[in-house]
Length: 369
View (cartoon, one colour):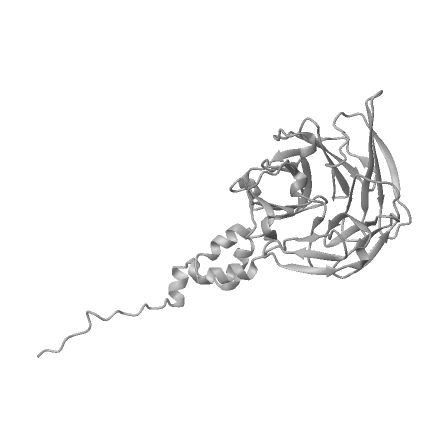
């Protein structure tokens, strides 16, 4: 019997390309890993993630150069005592910090991992880092104030603190006056000045004015009683106000006391978010002294974290993109209340009648170490 030949059933092995063949017919599969990493490092996070799904080699290169920003955590003040909660809004991990240094103190502002505090009785003001327990004193400020902010950590030589203590309107001459005070760590007193405005854009806005520092200026935003708002800026070196007003017309139809504005910066650009209870948050970017409303495509994954006192902005958070996170706990304390810009819905779904429900004054966003 003739033997059965196996030549028709044998599967030949795939032959590897020689170096000469690769040189004649190059492909993306043959790119060296160092070059792939350079290419991946130039992609924005969204495109980096898409490219990583192509193959194992691309995934390894994309992950090796992927930069994911740190998201802020929620710092919660107790109703009594000195046990403070620090909560991760992504994994909802809770840490307890015992901070007797903050007894009899009220919160004013937070930025770059530092808290700006004020003693309730003595009116002493100071910076405090809840992680390192470091404290930096400021001159006492006896009066009440409307809003306050600082530029950078108090350990920097460039740190400056600014506060607006009063807004006055004089009916007889349609004159509006604003009082601003500034100081820096190590100073012995505040420098205060009152400036006069004749513009109708300046409005007494005690609860919804926001102050934010960027590019040697304190930006001051006002919501209007009839909707919308305007932006003013105070130059810290020349101590002059910018007379050009960046006006934004709000689509919200709720009353003055139900609106809130939040200023934040990203890569040197100033952003504004307006919200009012259960309405859709509106987001704008300052472009050439004008507020430009941003579409969902233009946002490109931005994430807002807002509270009664401050706001933080990120754009490299893969699992939290296109969301607004408020400082209010959700049901059963398992998550923060958030708004999905992709789905145009709040989570949990509930009627929020005012922005203060979403941003209670007992919590603030802080950058963890």
